[in-house]
Length: 72
Image 1 (tube, one colour):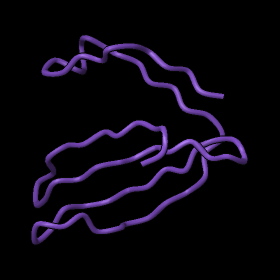
Image 2 (image 1 turned 180 degrees about the vertical axis):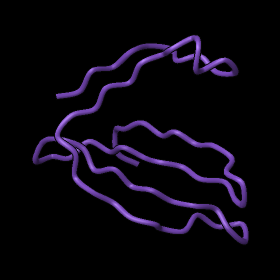
Image 3 (image 1 turned 90 degrees about the vertical axis):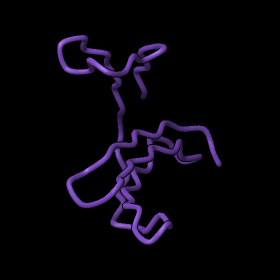
Image 4 (image 1 turned 90 degrees about the horizontal axis):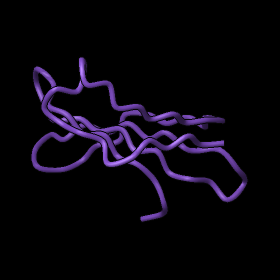
């Protein structure tokens, strides 16, 4: 897997995740997937120019970000 960030969570009906992978051409590719029948299934993707990850203690009560990354 290339350099990136993955956010995974449980939805009402299935497990979901969003992956952000750095592109050689610049920016990031956002890939959304959902886990059904024991496999990750592609939902959609798009190219994004910037990525900001913040740890907000009021929102992220059951997880902690190890660091804050501000992408290009």
